[in-house]
Image (tube, rainbow, N blue to C red; front, top):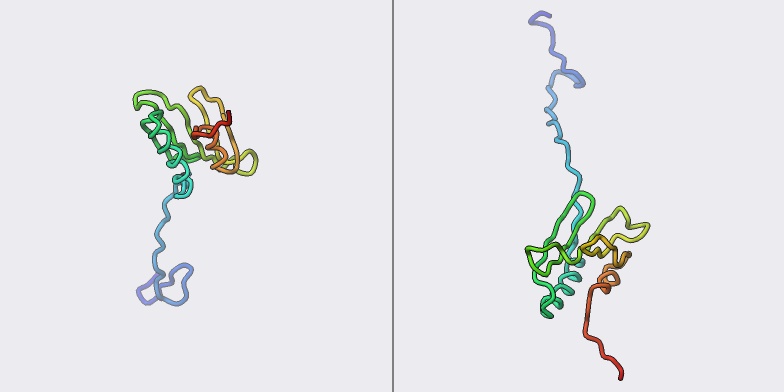
Length: 128
C-alpha cells in the first residue's frame, strides 16, 4: 500500500470513517418486584395485623425469579408468612402465593386480594 492509495474503511462508502459502535454490556435479567397496587394491598393487611399486635416486622426481596414479602413476629425469628409473586406460574396456578414457615402453601391464585384472605384475620360480626 502506498501513500497515494485511498483509504477504504470496511463497510463504509467513500473515505469517511464510520462512528464506532460501543460494545454492549451483557444485560442482567430484570428482577421481579411488586408494583404499587400490589404493595398497597399487602401493606393494608400488614398494617391491620400490626395494629392487632400479631406482626412486628417485614422484609421485601426482589429476586430474579420471584418477589417475596416476608412477615415476622419478631425480627430475630423466621418469617411467619411469605407472600410470593412468581410470574413463571402466572398462567398455570397463579402468580401469587402465601407460604408458611414450614413451606406449606396456604393459598395460590391469580388475584392477590383473594390470596391475602388466607392470612387476613379481620374482625367479623358473628350471629348468636
